[in-house]
Length: 321
Image (cartoon, rainbow, N blue to C red; front, side):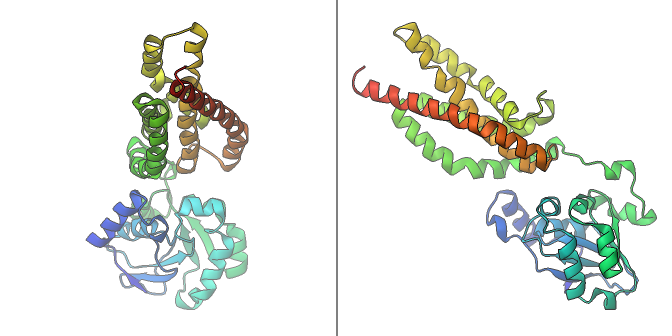
């Protein structure tokens, strides 16, 4: 199979769709061996996933270069996530080398893999089973032209970055992913508590899906759930003030009405923030599992209490209480 180092308008449109989460699992290329330029048996062999954006990032970075690109079947998942899941892994790499008859196609016995795929590949096993040496290139495909001059990665090439632009790139897909649930829940809350409740929910979702990614490095707390809860509380301050100044009746009842604002809506923000662990370079698999076991039960209690109180207030209001 042949490919080029130039991205077409169709490629860029597909990238936009992928960033928006449209047809999310269909942005993939066929696994196998691709030729870039006019490679010969001694040309370098690069390995990537069959996620379209990963494949395109690699080929478009190799401007003017002749090379082989070995695409693994990661089920349309990017290199980093697929390595964690095991699909960008030793077995798939060994299998793909055999299926493409790579040993007969090239004389070189070196495979250049992305650094972020290292967690899924046991280099010694690949060498033992196929005779190919695994060489880890830089984190970013854009550094490959410089890397290929010396075949040595600088400290900067090895450094994993998660810049504001990187985080902002994830916001559209986060927003679209929560749009429908927010619309449904917002409609329910409108009938239960009016615009006040619906707007509080929208604020909580925006805090988790937009503010949390933007402010991620500057929130001085380790756990994503706690980060989200803190953000949710801050966003709820105007609603707390409005509720306190607008409520009437006994003090205990006015305070009871604050519970959903203090517990429920920040919990929504915390849950969204927790889910962002899968998009962040700040976390580990073990750390995420610990956080899930630690905070999900607490979130369930907070949200349950808030839902019961919100329904109770709505029923009391309907009965004239």
